[in-house]
Amino acid sequence: MGRVTDDYRRLLPGSTISEGKPKERETMTVPSITLNNGVQMPALGYGVFQTPPDETRTAVATALEIGYRHIDTAAAYGNERQVGEAIAASGLDRGEVFVETKVWISDYGYDATLHAFDKSAGKLALEQLDLLILHQALPGEFDLTIDAYRALETLLADGKVRAIGVSNFMPNHLERFLDATTVIPAVNQAEVHPYFRQPEVLAADARHGIVTQAWSPIGGITFYRDGSPGSTLQDPTINEIARTHDRTPAQVMLRWHLQQGRSAIPKSVTPSRMAENLDVLDFELTPEDLAAIDSLDTGVRGGPDPEVVTREAFGREIPEA
Ligand code: NDP
Picture 1: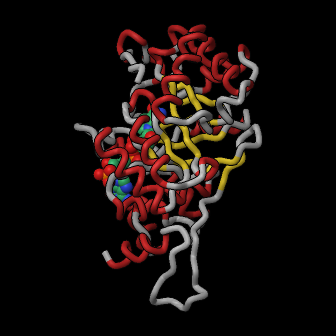
Picture 2: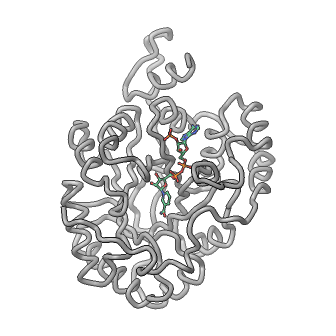
């Protein structure tokens, strides 16, 4: 616990470590990734999927205090309002926090998606969003998915959003999509962790200059669902690498993403874990470590198969306010 507490204090912006000399003032700056339109996005963000609305404000406030400057939410998470409240109360300048949210499939269609922006921006109490992405492709209603993306293109042209992207897009979705749209997505947020690496998605994203952003980056979906096959946190290879570097398994996995050029958005409502997950900027995995983690891929997906997402099965109304 002592180490975590020290890390926490060290990660507080502008804080000093009292045991150290006065000059040892440390501010941990998360490296930025430059998106394909030049926008800078902190590579490491903070996710709020499954964080209940009544806990979200405190969780995001703590995350901002610890030093996160990129928050990932979604209309479908039902907690955009509380994310916005925490940002407003943080006292940080608007330009210091990168805010990302997602349009849910029930709001796809040109006009509906323009309105989805109004709903999300209203709840977040922000005039401009940093990154707005489509949460899923609708493979059976691809024209509707494209209409939704055209609305994102309009929002981008109008300056309402600084960058646009997609989530859970498979290579075939990207190919169909790129033929029919103008702006190449800046980001594809996808399930990527050591047990499900999706190399074909990583390759397709790289081919088109799209940043892959890992959801469940420490493999949350391998342990927080009933019937999950096995936990990445318990994995012997990851634990051995963690021991070698005197780090935790979560830190090793986050470092793996960063060193391979991905963005990652770990979620935790536990302050010590929030700090732990941000404290990954001052160690380096070896090429052998990276290859050993790559080799853990089981090819078994934890989340829903993007090919079977339909509005009938997954649709739900996103409230106006
Ligand atoms: P994560 O890989 O971030 O894992 C989260 C889980 O791990 C929680 O149970 C958390 O517990 C626990 N945890 C966090 N840090 C540590 C740690 N250092 N040591 C041990 N346990 C830890 O999974 P998520 O699925 O939540 O993904 C992260 C984010 O990705 C989401 O919040 C969301 O923003 C996004 N996402 C997007 C999806 C999409 O379809 N686009 C789908 C799923 C997620 P606790 O909170 O109790 O500390």
